[in-house]
Length: 165
Image 1 (cartoon, rainbow, N blue to C red):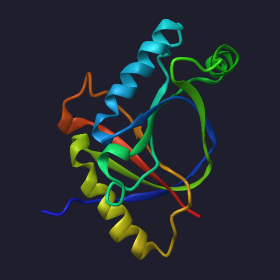
Image 2 (image 1 turned 120 degrees about the vertical axis):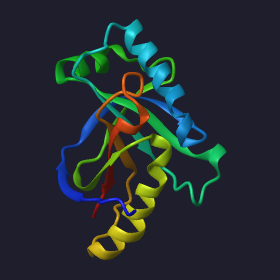
Image 3 (image 1 turned 90 degrees about the vertical axis):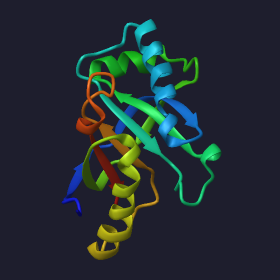
């Protein structure tokens, strides 16, 4: 059964996010999120309304798993972010990363993270090819709308955000 997939074109404002680098299989980015949350907790920066974001730089079809580059990130509310900027003499592998603004093709994926490869293949291979649009030379990011710590894998909701030019 083919899944119904819909893509929304969305204008995204540039964002500064607090991030931890990850190198290796994308499905292991959880380790970087754990390190990021430990750091945020230690600095009393865990905010209820923060948004969880993964930034992905490499194509797993081209780059070997051990060399894949990504960042585990959170977007904190403005005032908290200002505090981070002044406090972060970026330590413990934590840095502030800018995600570029502009138009993004946004595909909502519901289900386990391990099933997302098919969603990416459809987004790049089918939607992008038929859309008349081109991918921008910028990383894809994912926004996690619920937490794998509190949500069954089948109910995880992720927005895959592909930058367009």
